[in-house]
Image (cartoon, rainbow, N blue to C red; front, side, top):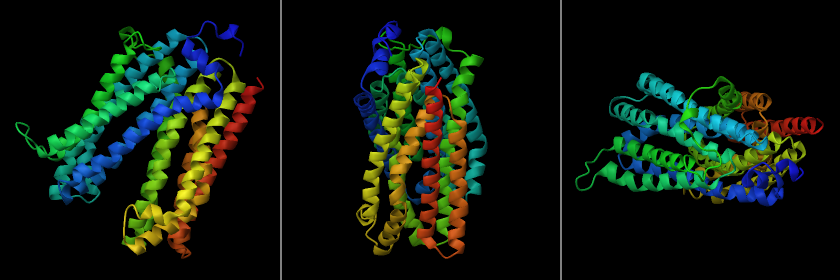
Length: 456
């Protein structure tokens, strides 16, 4: 892209369009890696804090928190991806006013989404938890925990969508800082509110929920303070805080299917656990520990995926499709290398399993499961990076269909493996085939789409 064609753009946008691709990708992704660490800490610490309250509290959290995690994923990498990709394209095209309008519509979407989420979970949550087998004390705790967690869903929506406003403008540092500061509040408040101290009464599981939501509330405050300041490339302005059909359609045309794809990934974990449950407690315990390695790949890959969205969307908005393609392929290559690291860990699965259990039978079963998946971790990384690149150019239908197909392959293949006596390794191979379908399929779709764009 010529210097004259970018002269009217901000310095940050020009840098995204002109800087060497690999160093820029790594620079943008670095703060996101810190953010991923904060999110992993949140997931781990919350389970630890709730465990202080006994078995009923653990059972309550076991049914509520996965649903909350779905909300987190759907807003951050789902609807949020629609926000960041649309803003990136607007800035790349030199249309700063549209970028500000999109940011305002993102606020409106957050408000509507939060109201619907809270109303839905307050209405059906207790019935759902009872249907999942909770009773008496555990059910009461689940209802309380859910009321607090989903009652504060407005902060989840706001923080994740505002974070993607900043990411779409090429600023990864502020969202990472906001999320990290929020997690510090979570770590400090949880013991105080759960157990009580001095004038602060012990709130039990309600305190755990308040501390968790406080992390999102603090993160939201940090992001708002930045986005209304003169330092923000895309500023939040009150006049834009309203629903506009065109901008909402642009965000949701990517974000809605992206959220559905994220939901499909979450559902797959539950379905595989259901298949493995028939093999006994040792197998399900092994899967629970082994699957953590698989789940760990997602936030780390997202750290690079968020940078890929910004780089590709900005280049696409500037009609520099050759650079958009280079950014997509570079992101895929980096994610593939990260996947190789995960493959190495999976090949020596006993070391990973030893972090969670000393039981030799569980270790052996988990190591076998990881061995079946070892070969596809790089392809998973490539596929996820290409998935984010597709979101950046507004192409989501094909990747969404592959995400749904992945669920079908896991369920049908896993069921067939059990019927044929394949056991845990059979289910692992079915999961590997599903990952290969998704990763390879999205790569081919991205390659076709970017080659088509580059010719026009």
